[in-house]
Length: 486
Image (cartoon, rainbow, N blue to C red; front, side, top):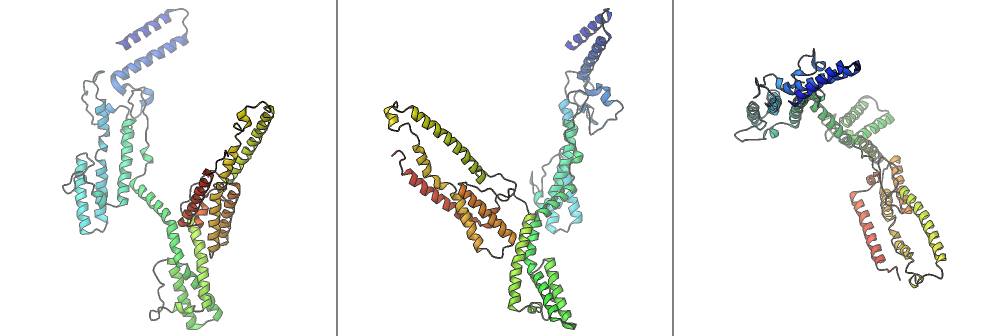
C-alpha cells in the first residue's frame, strides 16, 4: 500500500511538472527514470526475479548452473507454487532443493573409486570382501542422501577409510570438493535480493579433479623424497671410486687379452652397481669367484686412497643433497652484533648528555644543597656500579658458542674447503658478537642465520646452554651479595 501511494504521488508530481511552463525536459526525464525504477522494484518484490531488468537477461538462455531465481529451478515445487504472493514465503525450500544434490554425493564418488579398485587392482580375498561390503554400503548411503554408511551392520561406520589407500581418499575428497563448490556457487550466488544480478562465489572449473589432486600429491612426495633419495646414493660412491681406480691400475699395467677383458667386466659391474644404487654388493661377473673384483686393489695405499676419497666425495654429495631439501625460512635475529653496537653508540651519546646536565646542576646547587643532597642521597650514579657488576654476562653466550665451534672444527676431518670456510666465518661472527657484548652474531649468511647449528650436535648445543646458565647464576649470586649503596 505504501509503495502504491508513493507511485501515485510520483505520477501526480510528474503530471504537475509537465503542465508547468517552466518545466525542463531534463528534469522530466529524470523523474520518469525514477518512476520506472520504483515500478521495477515493486514488481520484483511481488513476483521474485521473473521481472528482472531485461538488460541482464534478455536473449540469454537459462543456465541451470547459474540461476537467477531459485524458485524457477527445474523440478522445484514449493509450498507457494500456484499461489505465490508477498505473504507466501518458500524461499528456504527453494534453497534446500538447490543444495539437495550435495547430500550423499561423497558416497557416490566413493562407490565409483571402489568399483575401480575392484576391477583393476590385485586384492587378497579379505580385501575384496571388505571393499565389496564398503561398495554396497556407499551405494545405499547415496540412495538415502547420506554420507554416513552402514557397513557390515555397523551404523556410521568409517571402516572404508582403512580399506582404501591415501590416493583413493585424496581422489574422493577432490571430486567431492569440486562438485560441492559447483553447487554452493549455484545456490549461494543466486539473485537472492531480486536485483537482477548474480554473485559468483567460487569458480569450480579451477578446482582440481581427483586425478589432478593425485598427480599433485605424487609430485610433492617426489620432491620431498628427493633429498633422501640423494643421500642414499652416498652409500654407493665407494664403488664408483673403486671402478675408477681399477681402470687406472689396469691401464698402468697395460693388461691385454683375457686378463684385460676380465678387468673390464669387473669395472663395468662396479659402475653399474654404483649407478643403480640398489642391493648390498655388486653382482659377481664370475659366480665361481664372486670376490674377484675385490682382489684387484689389495695394495694398502689403494685402500687408503679409497677411504679418503670416499669420505671427501660423500661429504660433497651430502652438502648438495641438503641444498635440494627444504630450506629454512628467512629469519631476522634480534640482539645481533650490529644492533648492540648501534644501541651502545646511542646510549653513550645519551650518557654524555645526561652527565653534562648533572655537572651543570651540581655547580648551580653548590652551597645551597640540602643535607640529604650533600650526603649523596640524590646522586644516583651508584646505579652504574650495580649495572657494571652484571657486565660480564654481555657476550658470554657468544663466547661459549664460539668456543664450542672452534673445538669441533679442530676435531673435524675430511672437510671440504667450502665447508671449512663457512665454519670459520661463523666462528668469526660469534667472536665479533662476544666482543660487542651481543647475544647473537650478524650471520654470515642472512638467509640461513642458524647455519652454525649444522656444525655442532644437539648435545653440544645443550652444553653451550648449560655453561651459560651456570655462569649467569654465579654472576647473579655475586652481584646480589654486593650492596651498591655502601
